[in-house]
Image 1 (spheres, helix red, strand yellow):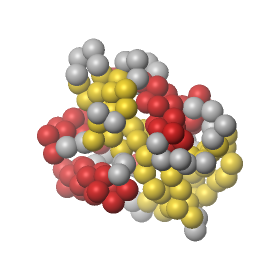
Image 2 (cartoon, one colour; image 1 turned 135 degrees about the vertical axis):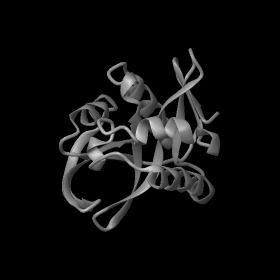
Image 3 (spheres, helix red, strand yellow; image 1 turned 45 degrees about the vertical axis):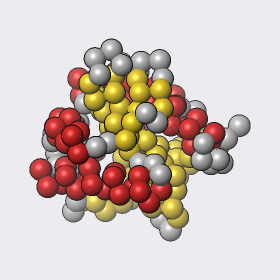
Image 4 (cartoon, helix red, strand yellow; image 1 turned 30 degrees about the horizontal axis):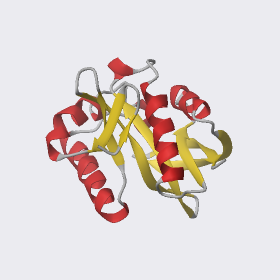
Length: 170
């Protein structure tokens, strides 16, 4: 276990989580900010990318487990992401649609922010969010972040405006 909150714990993803990842990454509505659901090979590549991040950085997107049921309900964690010409430490989150609007993303994201400041000694963390993804923007705001920049990223054949949110260590 990497982190624990009141209702959740976060741990590294493992190959056995592929089915749970499919529930997230292959749902059209959940993946609207990514311009559509992933297929099986994209889902496997996503999982392998997280496993590689753990080896390279010691962190990545982690499995979010609901304590009450022991079910993997989402992913949340820290990744290195490119923003314009910089590499930034980003808090990312993506949850099964059935668990939206219950505060889980905020609970996990706040814990990841605290982890970045306390364990990684980061001075600042970011979230990069598509301009149309209002719920994720709201999570960033509840995580104490403010919008500091905009940029259009090209992803999956589409130009996608994104906002950069930031919070610094107190």
